[in-house]
Amino acid sequence: MSAQMHPRRKTVFLMYHELGRPGLAAQQSAASPYLVAADVFRMQMRAIRSLGLRGLSVSEAMRYPEEPSVCITFDDGYASDWTAAAPILREFGFHATAYVTAGFIGTPGYLTADQLRELDASGVEIGCHSMTHPDFTVLPDAELPRELGAARVQIEAVLGHGVEHFSIPHGRYDQRTLAEAGRAGFRTVANSRPHANGSATGPFELGRVAIGRDVALVDFVDVCGGRTLWRKQLADGARRNLRGLFGACSALRAVAMPFCCPPPTPRT
Ligand SMILES: [Zn+2]
View 1: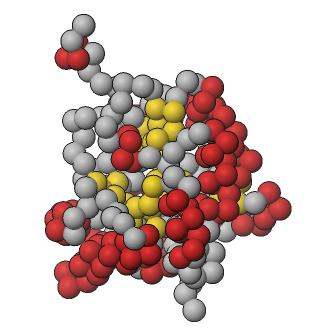
View 2 (view 1 turned 30 degrees about the vertical axis):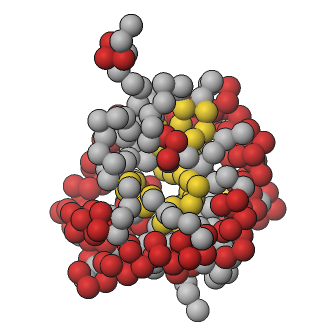
């Protein structure tokens, strides 16, 4: 049968942040709804394999292979990308993309330059997650090149090769952000809108589903199969409407959290 008679399936892109070591998980998870214990992450990778899916990087997923798969991504550039996630991904033979915040490299809790190179050499694809993790919707025009082009150049200088993929901090962006991402030479931009992606999805409009500490395994399995995304889309729409009505005040931040990155660790 021709390819037209078998439209390519959509791929769910998963969005992780930090993984926690078992001894630290309880304490840390109280502070971050996005911290997933390493053993829970391993269980989720096992579930992906049991479903007959493969874990792919963004570059691999963008080819939209016929083979059933999920795309695995990490935001912010936590040290746990190297210390916790990479070994588990290797156990399962899965690939992934780690979006790194350039200005956080070498600061407490985040990847050092050496770890970033080791992560890259281990086969985890490296992407960019801005320079300082700003809210792009309130960023002055003059600062856009630093947060996109300069951040890309800084990460490329550490790696010694090109970086093609960008993910949006806090999931908040506007058309200026996407235009500047194009000028900076990125090939794709991923946001935090919970939809699966297919060959008809614009490369600068890649949706992702946040996986936080409270995701039950049964729900994780449904998400990977794309079965419950409509519920998340309704919730996402409601949150965006609330933010549109009231602005991003602190009281609403808690409501909006499931679709934002956590606030960065205070810089000293
Ligand atoms: Zn982030």
